[in-house]
Length: 261
Image 1 (tube, one colour):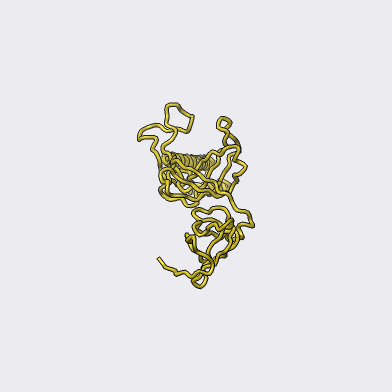
Image 2 (cartoon, rainbow, N blue to C red; image 1 turned 120 degrees about the horizontal axis):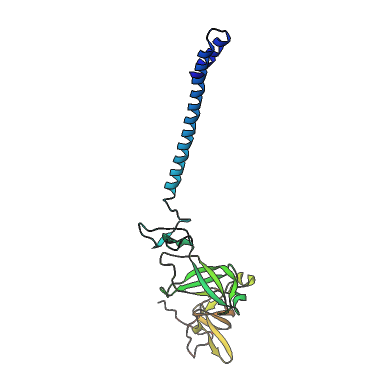
């Protein structure tokens, strides 16, 4: 409205229908109004800046964890001063201690003389001292590229493959690094029997194969133990039935009676 009045009075002055004094008064009011608008706009921007600053202050009252996790300890109480690490000797450096329970790892020291046998991705068995009868599957996640000169060890970090809720931070654990079979061995089946099925006849190790309720003495070649069983390299095949703890007088062709337990 002030701008319209100013333009109208200006045209009237040009037509000499009003005096210069009357126009000067209108012009003064116009510039005063413009200055008022500019001042009001500056005040609005200043108020908006104060609002943004207040919002930042409010956001700073919330402490967000950098990851999802579980609170392990509360390090500060209500009313205590908290500051970034090292910024003040009189302030607490942390509010809480949290842990990502899904990414827990086992740290294991490996002797320098054995570190060449360890590689990333190698399978492991993890046994917690708290649960000695349970085994967890693990895999070598990290081999720290430095050695401890005092202990002559290299630190490795083992990732759980089947962790459950019983696994907690700072638990003690033992790790068994598993050797991996060669590619050729992976493609082969391993045949094994109970060692009581193998007896010595003369200088030959034999097993008594059961066929049609008769036994047949079969020479066998034994391999390494596999748990409670023993590997059979030759002489038997998968699916064969053999006599356990064969008596001294048993020989090929003898008829036997199979009793199921």
